[in-house]
Length: 206
Image 1 (cartoon, rainbow, N blue to C red):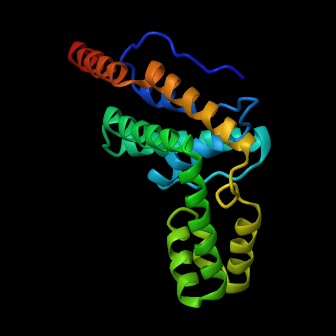
Image 2: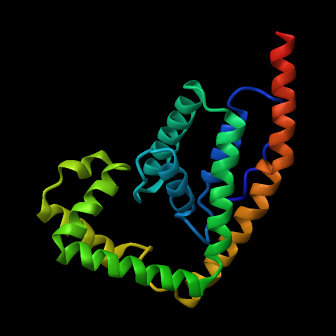
């Protein structure tokens, strides 16, 4: 799948949200889980449910849920340009670090150690339950045996805990470069400033 390149900026409401989601809603051949890896970071930052692998159907539902959540925050008073810029910068930073395989492996080791502690230590388990419940409410009522099973599943099968292979490194580099290039073109600071100027003009003309 090729990157989506948005057209000229118009200053319309929700236009920046559309542009952000156009960047997230991708599944390139070299990284089918692009939408989940970048979308999960946006989801955490706006308190939306974190996506799980689920093919195209899961992807469509997640992007729709993420859109609803971001639009809700804007409707409640968050400035669209401020919110979208903050999310884009957070993901840009994450994308830049993904190409650093050494850092990725160190992070994976820290996550593995933490999950092992969750499995073995009730205090760590309770803290993890509380933290996860802020993103996925079902965790709040999850009994210990299911919580341990979930931690074990993540320990054994999550991309966050797996050491990077040479293929992973190449994919991460390609993904990082592709995100940063598309982000700059579709939602760079110059784009956001242009949208803000046109948005103010539209409001003054109505």
